[in-house]
Length: 143
Image 1 (cartoon, rainbow, N blue to C red):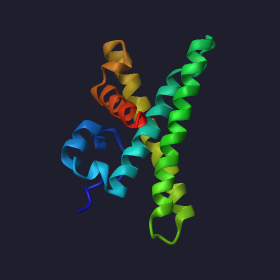
Image 2: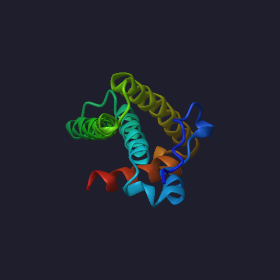
Image 3: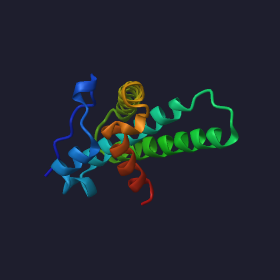
Image 4: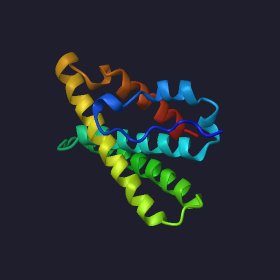
């Protein structure tokens, strides 16, 4: 049985934490390709947003961190694309472009959430979706 994979968010109000998504789809998180693809897309977008927060940094450790986040984004994107390539759909190239658009849309949402949290609470890590999603994405990346 496939999980209910939400369409990628069109506005900030549409995004739910990966913790909440996992709670509703825990059985599918390990086996359902659309669910795995959605999580990979979310992680790719989050890593892009976190790298964006470091844009303009010149300290070597910060540049290294930014590059590491971009590598993780690329790996997550690659996972989503590989899942798509294994699907029986006929127009894989168009679907891959759609994955890219979803990553971009979600990255903007994460960036906005991070800006808002930084202004309201002093740190973007105070946003429960950003910090919670990061923990889940990091756990997935270690597999």
